[in-house]
Length: 282
Image (cartoon, rainbow, N blue to C red; front, side, top):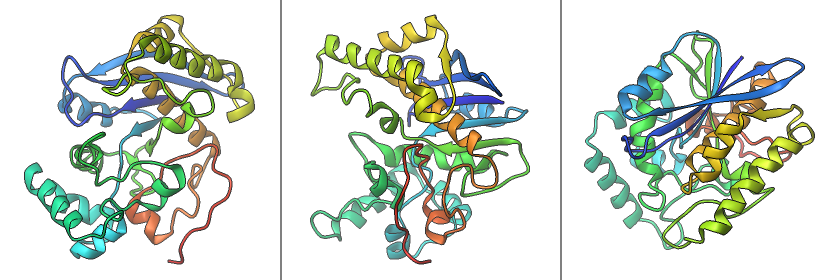
């Protein structure tokens, strides 16, 4: 099975492409991470989504929006209905809607979380800066919907290519908390050590933590370690999440209660470490 990991960006370009890590999952051997492909435009991203053949892809971006927002704006609850609604808007209009929504919320409730965000300590999909995940949703979700792939658990298609929402921080946390260069953290030596710890951890402990062995080409490991922004490493971690989901098998691929109405509206972050949680009644 072909496995892919993508660290999505809302504005891909030559200097900051969407890195696609490619690998193959072999029964009895595990995941072999083989190559890196930069997608320098949304056209390249769309072409990637429509590639033929069986595959599992993990993408770091919010696939859906919180039900609190959908309810208050009286938008459709179905993902396949509200995503086209958003796609018809200009980006500036979508952002203004979010700003107006936030202005009406009480302090501390301006950026509501999805169920899956709360469980995984992830950012709200309404966040416009640091990081701009709302813009990632605006650019990414319509393209996911337009593709022929199955977007789990939001839309099942006939395609043998399945896409899951991944959150690389989940797989980084067991080994290091800081590994990306930001305005607030420019300690390159410390961050490089963080990326090394994460990669070494997964190359040596994946069998115990995920149930399968992971190997990666030395050249790609070096590129991930030298990438101060951490984008390549994030794509590798997304590929690990996709491989784990693939191993969980049909029908849910590690996504619990995938028919739950809230999950079917908001989406779900695949988390190999999630063992227990409670869901609201549908």
